[in-house]
Amino acid sequence: MVLVHVGYFVLPVFGSVRNRAQ
Figure 1 (cartoon, helix red, strand yellow):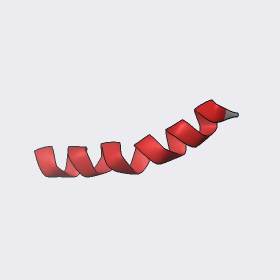
Figure 2 (cartoon, helix red, strand yellow; figure 1 turned 120 degrees about the horizontal axis):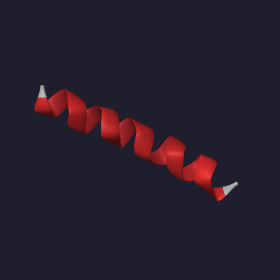
Figure 3 (cartoon, one colour; figure 1 turned 60 degrees about the horizontal axis):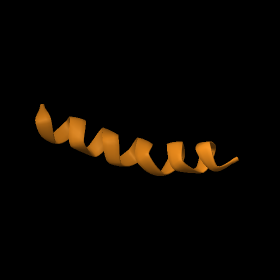
Figure 4 (cartoon, one colour; figure 1 turned 135 degrees about the horizontal axis):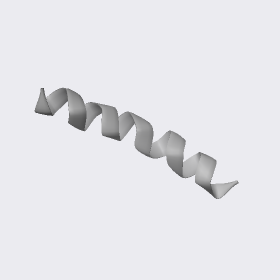
């Protein structure tokens, strides 16, 4: 499933961006 791979790849990046915004 490509969606699962994309999700796992974007999740850490999204978390990093959120931590930077805080």
